[in-house]
Amino acid sequence: MDLSKCRALVTGASTGIGLAVAEALRAKGATVGINGRDAARLAAAASAVGASAHAGDVGVEADAQRIVADFVRQHGGIDLLVNNAGFGRFAALVDATSADVEAVWRTNVLGAFHMGREVARHLVAQRSGAIVNVSSTAGTKGFAGGTAYAGSKFALRGMTECWRDELRRHDVRVLLVNPSEVLTEFSTRAGASRRSRRRSSCPRTSRTPSWRR
Image (cartoon, rainbow, N blue to C red; front, side):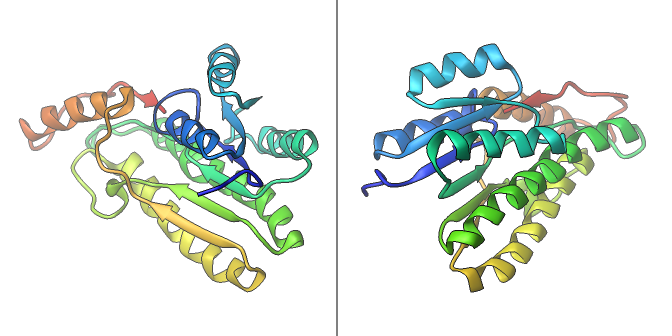
């Protein structure tokens, strides 16, 4: 597949799935920009991939607007958004905190919304392009301790269906992918956490470590 005319922006792409997607897009000839919160790590990844770097927190509306505007200004437009930024915090319902749930949803749901909206405005205007939301199998079936993370992925699935119905009339495609466990730092820690949860039906850890892809 020749993607030499595709201008793609991938969020959460300093490491893991996002970085692998960026590498695959570049290998097919696409012009790629990557996003992440850690500017130094992002710059190193962008240099290795041959992509432009657009640092910022997608969960902050002003950052998301700037990220998209900078990418469009630098590359003359946008054809593809890969909404990959996300992270997880896991705890039993009785131990979960509002702060943890809000933090996860701010990136996984609100961040995807911010980026999707800003990019969709360009795609609708040009009547072409695509948005790919990276969810998880956690968005198809919940599990103990997954209130924040699985709940956010169910929400992303719902938003994807809404966007698909809205944007298809503008010749813009919206897709959802649901990776299972993948060999990244995120999934390694998630796997350990899930094994721990299986050993106890109601874990009493007030806060489990979080990780970001």
